[in-house]
Length: 84
Image 1: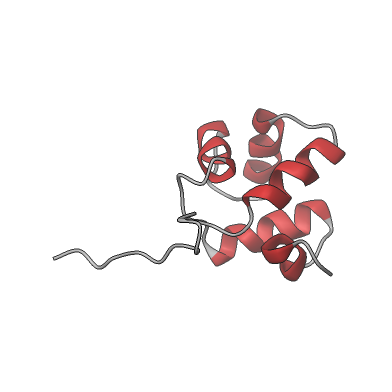
Image 2 (image 1 turned 180 degrees about the vertical axis):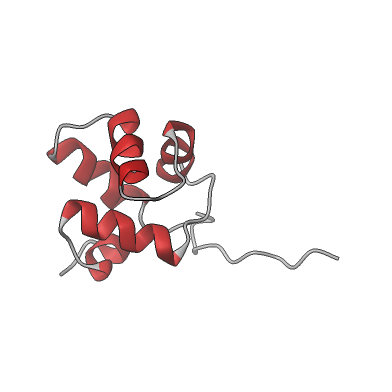
């Protein structure tokens, strides 16, 4: 039997989608460019993964959160709740 996966109160699968979209737009990069930058940093992420994260169709690993935080120069806390 599969273990149920946790979701937010709104039924979302991750906490970083809004912040990720905002950061990507602030830095004027596409989903494809973000995926490419993450790949160059050693993360196995493609454009479709970015789309699924941003639309809350995919869970995000702690390793990926670290990668996004490093890439954008923000804290984990910011990615999680938009506050530093």
